[in-house]
Image 1: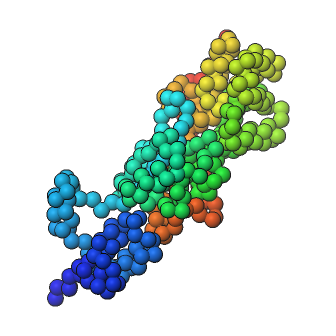
Image 2 (image 1 turned 180 degrees about the horizontal axis):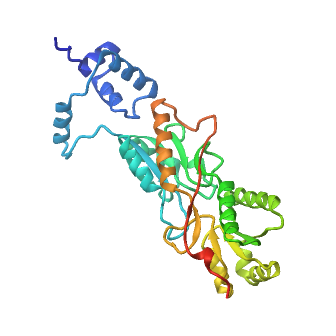
Image 3 (image 1 turned 180 degrees about the vertical axis):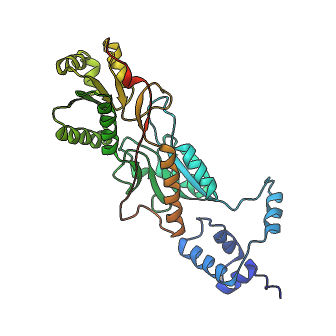
Length: 334
């Protein structure tokens, strides 16, 4: 015996709501309050309601849409990084969003200077969850309507305002680079970190470097200065290098090696943050695509639980870095 067809009108009559409200709620539209949406969806599930695909196709044809989609809308908010920076999280985000049936909108944070502007865009597009990209640790949550959407932060450095993070373990990155340099029989290794003014994440990385120095006091020398200081005192890095008679250097980015070369120093070098567009350098691969996939999985779990805003309990998923082989650690000084 065929099961009885359940229409949206039946649901509307049961709940004493309009058909428009039922339709929007079943589509997950944020215009309908979360409590009402949950009540409508629960009754639809209980009564065995199924979407009328013919009706959907008819509506899409009427409005000139090429194809129907029941995918929920989520967004990835790219944050400003260095000039020329290529977002390594995006491939993993797009892949996993598609696998889980989400439409991923890519937004640029620098296009939104006011919370009401961003709220309007999220509302008009029906975006229910947001993944925030990597920042320098100084992300301002004031620009986000954080109570209206589920939120996850994807990246290496963590802003204090967002408590749900997917990031690599900085201590693991520092230890991995040191271990690889030691494996090449280099005993005296320099750790170079040039600080960016106002970046809270630099403090986290600096602590990791000093922790390793305490474990291996005879094998590690540390050079930490602000970029602005180095620009006016470039010889300080050269003096530090020759004073400690270093066998190899580990820098946060390949830019450190550029500085050394300009000073006439050609030394075996490894990167804490591997740049895929500079394959000559040995370094730690943060596996950013995997971070992107994990952040979508985490956002999906929050959306399924109707958990909006910033979670009260911090969740940190550590992605162990992998080693990227190059030729820089085998190069010798001239």
